[in-house]
Image 1 (cartoon, rainbow, N blue to C red):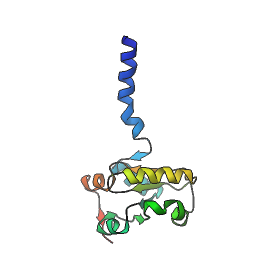
Image 2 (image 1 turned 180 degrees about the vertical axis):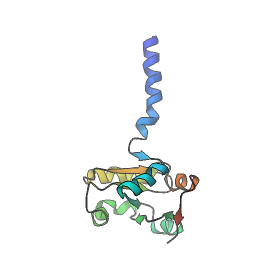
Image 3 (image 1 turned 135 degrees about the vertical axis):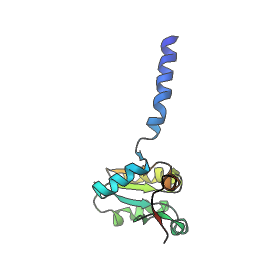
Length: 125
């Protein structure tokens, strides 16, 4: 009985870490952009992108990732960071990019809201 409780507790502690696999906090994104020249892809709709986005991000709505990602990022080993408003669409974009063969693609945890909350720079289109 105690062993079962211990295993369940350990799993519960690891669950948040497992759910965040493939996601980065704002500071990690900045480091990836500066050190490895990561490409930031904002998967929001154009009107959302126009209202504000990470400086230097490229807009590619989620519905177009499968068809147009290769035009924006030709080298599939280039670091790519997917971003949306809160992180849900960017997680789906990461999955789609991985199916296309992109090796180093991650999502900004918490999306643009987390970026702004961390006082990181944005721009408007």
